[in-house]
Image (tube, rainbow, N blue to C red; front, side):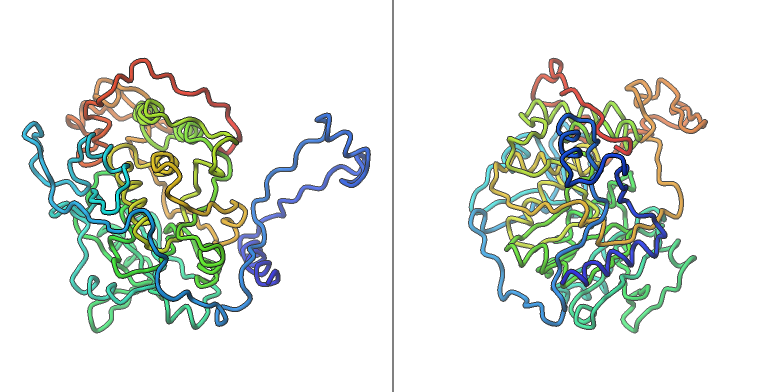
Amino acid sequence: MEKEAQRSVSLRTNRRGERSNQTPHSKSICNKDSKVFTMWSTIGLVPKPPPQHRCPIPIADDPKKVVIPKGRTPDKVVKNLLFVMEDEISSNVSQSTPLFGGHKSWKQREESFRLKPTMKVHCGFIKGGGAEMSAADVKYVTKCRFVVASGIFDGYDIPHQPSNLSPRSKKLFCFLMVVDEISLKFIKENVTVTEDKDGGQWVGIWRLIPLKHPPYDEPRRNGKVPKILTHRLFPEAQYSIWIDGKMELMVDPLLILERYLWRGKHTFAIAQHKHHRSIYEEADANKRRKRYARPLLDLHMKIYHYEGMEPWSPKKKTVSDVPEGAIIIREHTVMSNLFSCLWFNEVDLFTPRDQLSFGYVVYRLKGLFEFFMFPNCEYNSLFVLHPHIREHSSRIEWVTSWDQLKGNAKISNKGKDWDQASAGKGNLVESRGGLGLWTPYPGNLDAVVLPSVVRTSKAG
């Protein structure tokens, strides 16, 4: 069992040519079992070793021997889940075109967190809102019960073929790569795309699933559609493994389901973030690393703090409030699907930084959503991470002030200046996403003071 896990780790290390992350202690401090080391460590003279980047995964020996559970995990709290399909536009909303996420009211949002046996919630895919599949792809995915899904948007990556796949998993799983039209064109220019007799497009084992009419202005937000709403795109799937487009999966997907779902009788598994446990730490890191407009990140966090979301502490029942969201492992139960809908609704309403919303939704469901948050070192042993083909950035990520957002000041990044006022009114304000940050909030946020944050790592 351990040899198989070690094999996947060593493959990654050899392929990437990385050095070992194990730093030996100085010989003058003796070894870890000595009394001198123990005493010095107790009084703080010996630094704690950094957390492991990779570690062996306790996976099963052979995919052929994995026993797949019969039936579905029963739902105890929410038994029926319905979706809002038509956009309800109030008379005071000037925009007449349907939105992919719908025009949710604050009252509807609040009601969605009150669990009942039958729930009806917004969950994307409002009629006329975009993200449409071709008829051939809709027909193909209806046969997919086991899915490995990924996505590429705005032409930043090319598909990477999974490694170490067993013949059983090749037959059992559909490998579905969701792309926008820009990425489809980019992929065709850079790798070989074949077409089957039914019009399906393939890159190796990946079936390309083009989505027409991107629902959002921001490519990062478009990428959250297949990532979080996998159950909506592929409604017949019972199990899914999501991996980000820049990843090459290195572990057989059947072994992943056995390790992270079936062994512990879980229905949802996600890795713990390497550096942060509090969403306020993660938001601060997003601001420093220019992952979205700073004033909008602050407003997002103010709303959450106003609604009672406290920073993570050991008193909480969860390992962390911040996931490493590039790999998500799910059984598509009613409760798992509901959580995904509510998580996506937060991404739709606020910022596309989904790691900020995950812990908040867990908090609002008051422990009724159970999930497995596994160690980050195991997460890093599941894949090879490839760099993006080109820089992934947009102007909204450079914004540091409200004046810049409103077009009253220039923004600058890496020596480039851009005058919003000369580029058209409202060019930096997304017209179809993040509307919760521009809709009057039913509470006084003026007195909200965000929790102080201590930077926990150089990388973070």
